[in-house]
Amino acid sequence: MSESLFNTIVILDAVPDGELNTARRLNDDLKDIACYVAEGLQIRYVRIKTYDDLKLGLAKTSDEINNNGLKPWLHLDGHGLEDESGFRFAGGASCSWVQLKEIVTPINIALGLNLVLILATCYGGSFARAIDIIDRAPVLGLIGPTREVKVGEVERAFPAFYKTFFESLSLSKALKALDTGVPANLYFRTTAEQFFYEAWAGYKKNYCTKEQIEKRARGMYLKAKKQKLPRLPSVGQLKRDLSSKDNESKLFGKYRDLYFMYDIDGTNKKRFPVTYKEAESYANAR
Image 1 (tube, rainbow, N blue to C red):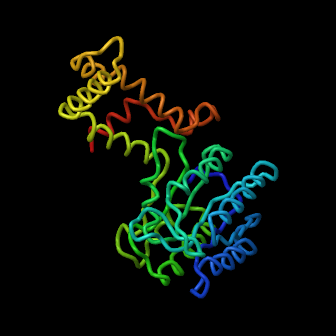
Image 2 (cartoon, rainbow, N blue to C red):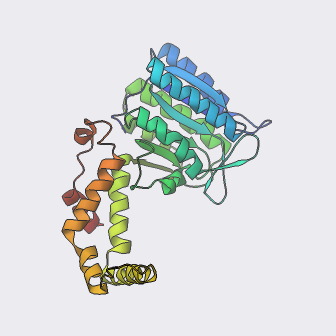
Image 3 (cartoon, rainbow, N blue to C red):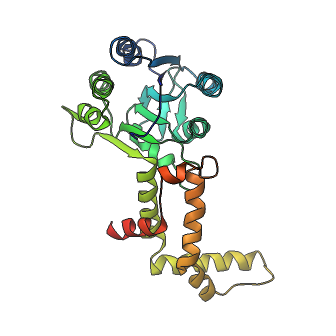
């Protein structure tokens, strides 16, 4: 996350009317920081009452990325859904994390995998559930609460995070400031690389045991039989294919190249030198 190149923070305000608006307060705090601490830092504020507001606001952000050299982080403030599947706009309608992912992924692509997303919403950390390693990485870094958070916690935590970061230029110190005075592990954080390794470890644990390979092979066989394919593979052949390290490493490389956008920016191969061997070692150690 510390490798993210940025010059702007875009505040997405989904706080309902009539409530203490921590997004507007953060906007004021960041403008002060831009004046006295972080010279050149730009602040953008977008009020999002509806999904259309979000689309329009981020469309303008994308335009500035492409035409004016804007390199933003996104900070979204509002109420998370109780089922941890997304958040509510200021107008009351809900937005799933999957919907948000679909909007922010093109921004991350335009930024060359440099987007940091900070979700100051209850259960904001659950955005990670919407990330899939068989697609482009939607963010370089993610920060968000793991549970319901109170207004006072948000009001204190994120201004302290940003102030510490811009004064020290140390992300580790900023994260310590974010965690100060709150229960352990309240704020989930991950990076694209860390998430990829974790997801691979989860895949190996949940889908690559002997029992799971047997189950997958039989499922594939029945599906092929139902489709009346001209050449019906045996369950044994399917099991051997699923167990093949050579096949698995090729699959790994395909997903890695797409997720880390090797095909869009060749420098990402050096930024994210993720290998099958390292991923396997990581999975085996879990």
